[in-house]
Amino acid sequence: MKRIRLYGMLGAALFLTSGCSKQGYDYAIPPKICGIGVDESALKPILPTGKEEKTTDSGSQDFEHRICRVIVDKDRALSLSILRDWGGVDAFDDWKKEFDNLRRVSPKEDVANAAVADDGAVATLKCLPKPDQPEKGLAGIPYTHLSFKFFVGDKVKSSKDVTDRRANIERFMWSYIPDLTETWCR
Image (tube, rainbow, N blue to C red; front, top):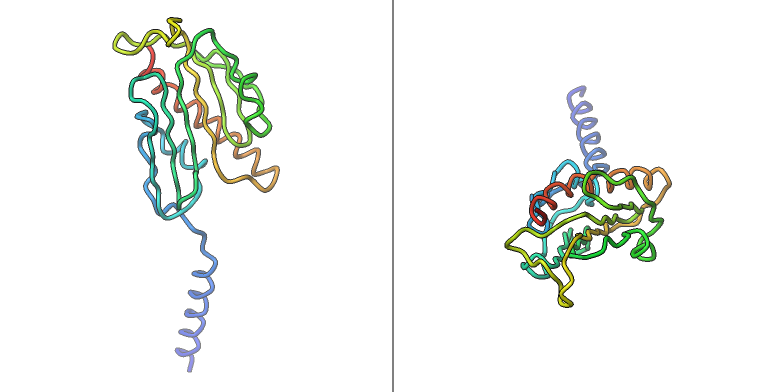
């Protein structure tokens, strides 16, 4: 009798815990986005849990612009774009209407300006093209900067979530920029 009761309690506990388990990351975190290596520990917190991941890369391969997306379970989880520029455009002024609650952050190294939002980030980098990359735009104006922005999916539900999410977004941005600069800039 004791054995039957023990098995019954164990079965009930197993049933209850299996129903309460959270969905995890059943997909591989992409090692690269837009041909740039990513730090998995910085990328994972801004991606949703899910079962399937697909990375798309649309845009040119000519080092003038690139747009890439990470799709998780058929929903856009991350959309990232890189664009050559001139004149050191202020990322905040140009893109503040596109983001939720965009705020400036202190730039680092070759970053002219940067901002983080509840749903993504932007940065303008001082960046002269490498010798084998396009040096001038259509109007013949030399490229001097690189604009980088990304959006993350899934709106957050509480202010604690927003604070954590913004910190994770900023962490991913700063982790991505060194390899981006190494690939696109001399």
